[in-house]
Length: 167
Image (tube, rainbow, N blue to C red; front, side, top):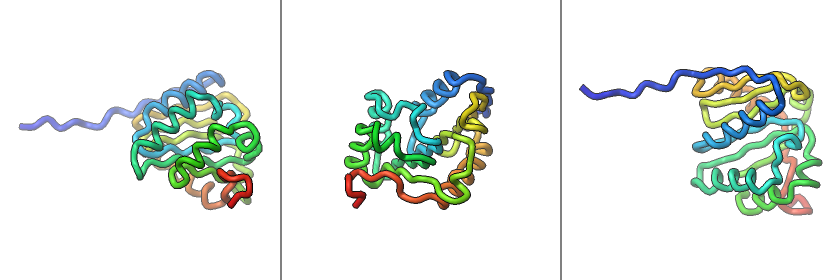
């Protein structure tokens, strides 16, 4: 008889502070196998210009042709003006890293979340509030957030380019 590994039990954790949210995001970045999807007002809170964050993104994107990072933002000004390292990654991985700006119905969304592969998610129901939840090894919760991300993505347009002309 062979041992069949059962999937890990889903874990859920309440988040009550900004630091807990940032710690959960950091944890999820370390769990990425192939895809990272982020929906955020502007990325300012997630330190996307630090060498450590860029190194993590580079590692994800360099992992293979099918590795992707999708970012949907309400406002791209912070990224365009204050994240030159992220812009440089756009130049290096033009098909692996994509940043969109929300429009229409998506522009009214008030939550923020990070989705890793098809199993892990951290979410704040209201972006300006600290309260949220972390879901690990939870394909059911992750599937719902993937559908939500896809809806946002469909109502968004390319928002940041690696070139100054946008071409």
